[in-house]
Length: 289
Image 1: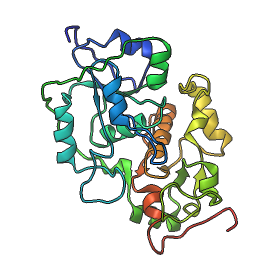
Image 2: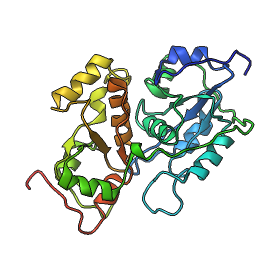
Image 3: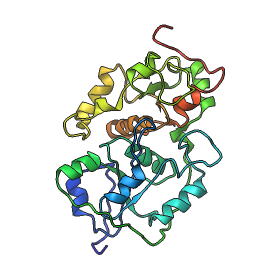
Image 4: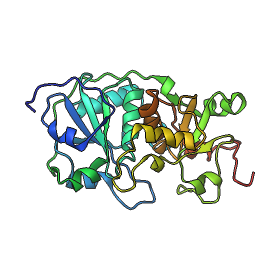
């Protein structure tokens, strides 16, 4: 990398912008691809075969809390710091994260960095699919950076726990927005992970992240259009809310688009339905209840 450093803080960047800044000294790129367990694809193998030049692979099922059996729960700050340093990322760097499904798991990485105090992080709009359609460069060469200087500081206001969500059933201080598909939310379709109850957290509302995206390009809609998606669902994007889903991935996408609209980061229920739906005594609502 030999281009001058930049001072840039936009939360969403275009493929054109990133292609022009691949050599910029303080720009770091992350492939944050994650596939749902019912999809027979391996993100790490696909990264090794083809990725944006200079990108490191961030595996949310590896960089997680080792003491928690739930999928990809946030790791302790010291683990996150250590792994991010190995990616060559420092506190002063501008991080761009993408994934192979457009804008699917990259917001989970964005939210995790914001949770640990790193504000200069953006998502590549349209992800790798848009990058490839535009015939921009990819490589199979492994990126081996020098260790960075990164320090994580957990900001719990962006995080919700089981106990907090359960307490909210009585207080209704926050609107709980669930990003799972409608059939899973209603309880009419079984969960892809075995052993989970079917349904949703009582009082929560359903809002799919795909509603915020252009189905032809995979890129996010314009800011006014994003705002209208919330309003059309009967949701005030400025109001207090917390996001949930199956395991905290789609929830982070909802948090990201809400940030694009309002500049406010909605907290994510990290355990999401995988925790709630497997916890004895946790109340469950269905479309019939």
